[in-house]
Image (cartoon, rainbow, N blue to C red; front, side, top):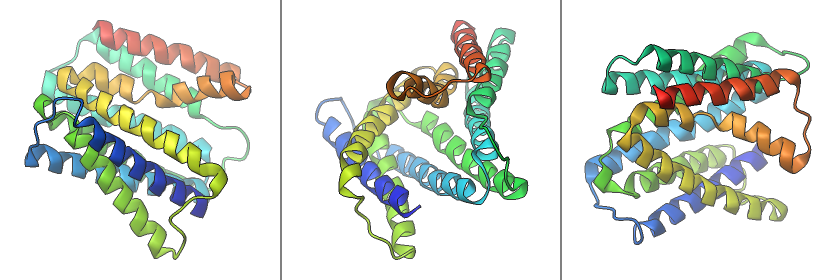
Amino acid sequence: MTGVLAVGVFAHGVACLVSLATVTVIPSAFSMDDFLIGAASGIGFGFGMILYLGGMLRSSSTIVAPLGAVLMVVIPVGYASLLDGVPSILVVVGVALAVLGLVLITKGVGVVGRIRPGLLWGTGAGVSYGLGLSILMETEGASGSWPGTAQRLVACLVAVALTLSRRKVLVPQIGTRIWAVLSGVCGAAASLTYILAVQDNPLPAAVTGAMFPAVSVALGRVVFGDEVRRSQGLGLVLTLTGVGAVVAG
């Protein structure tokens, strides 16, 4: 837990600096309203990480991961539907397929573990992440990189506060620092592209933005040679089909 928290602090900090640097490249008009929206999103992301890791420690990924993944889709999609109006049948079917696919992808193997803590912490993590993603839809396109900068700044501060409360070091071990930096760079890019996407078309962006568990499984197979079970392969197919249906609808 300590090492993960230190990596989180490092990664969020790097992401904040990268996002701030892009202000000079991407047209970004500072707006206090949008900056505060980004900060509120950062609270969701910061606590989402804490609750997710806490659930993993107290229960099992077989409970926490699927529950968190589903809520991270359902909440932003529901909010996007409020903004865009009642979705079409094709969109509803696509969301259902994507959610089912995520459950299959993230369902772990082995002992299930303690159910009640997993349900509580997994729900908290999913709701935190889901709200953090949803509120970004309220930002204006002219704000550019500022909401993402605020998001990562606050998420970093949340991680720092948790790490200090446990009286642990803030800097990760030497061997993990380069990966923390790369994670921060990718995180900054993810925040920026997600924000730009939901500003343009919230519903498809909300669905595709929550599909990162599918990408994680695919990368694990290609890069690390991880075993992909049949259920996970089916989940990948369902996820891609669902995303395609949402975009087409």
